[in-house]
Image (cartoon, rainbow, N blue to C red; front, side, top):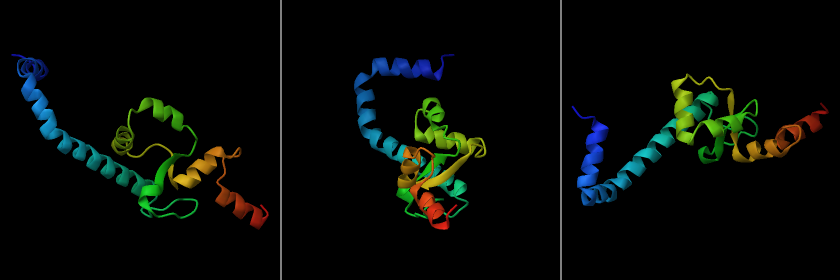
Length: 133
């Protein structure tokens, strides 16, 4: 008995025109399916790490498109090397029970915290200066 992979490879060799047609016909639905899965996984992860508030931990931004996940220990470079796409990272988080130490921050707070030498967001720095901490 031949494997499915072998049979698919033979079919593609014998029917190159049909393979091209199938890609043209089904590519849009495949792309839409991938986008939908990515949105679902991202929504699940942001909802979990924000404890259901769907807000930036620092400034309270609640526009979903601006929110992203921030690594508490600043070890995001390791995950970037390990996972090929954000969807595979989100799926890993879901499958492992959300074990990574992450928090939800808006893009501005995340980038500003990364640029700061003390790794403090300007919003929190301003509060500390006002309160004289």
